[in-house]
Every structure is written in structure tokens, then in C-alpha cells.
Image 1 (cartoon, rainbow, N blue to C red):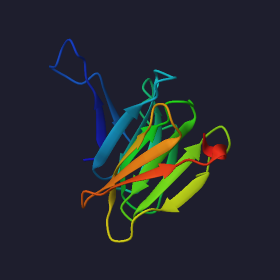
Image 2: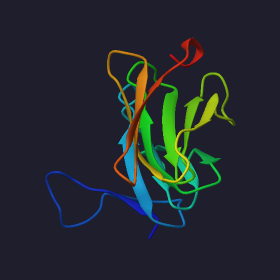
Image 3: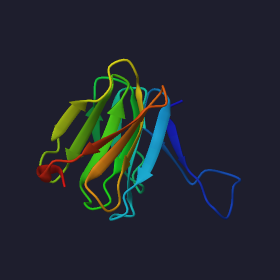
Image 4: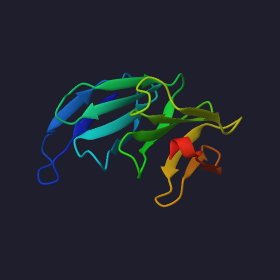
Amino acid sequence: EGKIHKCSKAYSGQYLETYEGHHMAVYAVKWNKFHPRVFLSCSADWTVKLWDHNIAHPIMSFDLGNAVGDVEWSPYSSTVFAAVTSDGKVHVFDLNENKHEPLCEQKVVKRAKLTHVAFNRESPVLLVGDDRGGVNSLKLSPNLR
């Protein structure tokens, strides 16, 4: 538990690489569309980790204080990503602005765990989903676009 395996599309007999960095279940892995070597992972261990697929350990780690249900890269910036946590918060990071703290942290729901996050491809809107089937739409402020 907590391992990420890189697989070959041509040969499924063994893993090409195993990335070890999480200590509990990994919920999502997302590639950066601007940098094909870079991906994010999120986990029940409260962390989001930034990886280079040529390195078996994480480049950076972000502790969000609760289980992280999903993570997503922004479609308009190579350094912006969002993550959602089990305490009902969405966290938006811009690594170009601050490599240690989120630019925005917003409580979205009170009695549900956030499980999914998605950026709108054309508008500055973020969708977040929870474990009760709810979906909330959030408009991003200009400094987060």
C-alpha cells in the first residue's frame, strides 16, 4: 500500500518502475500536460507528492492535514494544481508563486468528504465532488487563474 507502479502499454509482465513515497492508499495520480516527466499523487496519508518519472522518490511533498481524495493539474498553467481533502476543503497551489503553502484554501462542505476535483478547460471554474453525491462549482479569483 502506498506504492505507485509505472507500467508498459506494450508489455504487462512487470513494472517499469515503482515509486515509493506514500504510507497509505494512493487515491489519484495525474500527469502534468505541460511537462511530460512530471506527475502528482495524492493519498490517505494526508499528502500530495510531486514526482519526476525518472526519479523513484518524490521531488516535493505537501501535507494537507487530512486525507487527500483527488488532485488535478490546471489546464492553463504548468505550475497550478488543486487538491481536495476529507475535511471538505479545496486547496489551490501555484508552485511559481509559493512552493510551500497553497495560494487558496477554502472549506466547501461541512458534513461530507471531498473526493473529486476538476478544472474547467475554458473558464476559470473548479468543480468539486463529495462522498454524498454533491457537486459544487467554484469560480477562481483572478490571482488563481
